[in-house]
Image (cartoon, rainbow, N blue to C red; front, top):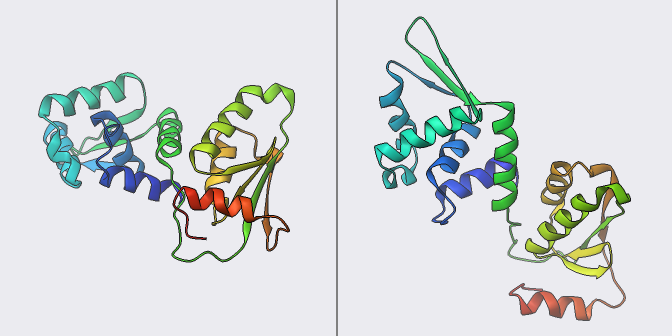
Length: 199
């Protein structure tokens, strides 16, 4: 699942974490927004594009907008012709990557192709925090640990794993292997089956 898919799923979800500010940020991540005329009414038009917009009051929406502006997560530019441009700032781009990371899931196909995805990483000591964060997120996604820095997953997960590694700046220290056969994978299959996987 890529970043945009992750954001779209977040917008369409009923997650309690989908607070006003995060939704506003996610909407902007789908593309720069050009609001014509007065800025205020058009903020509501932006929210109107998504079903979650109806859950937010005007006060919540304005508070969200000005918080994003205050913390420099968005860039707002007005033009002489009355148009206003609202888009993510570099800081906002980083924030949306964190949002994508937190909301990320690995889609499960209807049928398993019989191949294992083996994720291996070997991070230098200076990346201690990145190592802990990396382990946390791959475990949350459902990967099973085979050895200290070796994890397995039955379905395609390359894009998700590489996104996480890139986010923490350790892409060059990870590797993903596609293994067609493992001699002793019965126990591994059972672990995934216990969590609802159809293997």
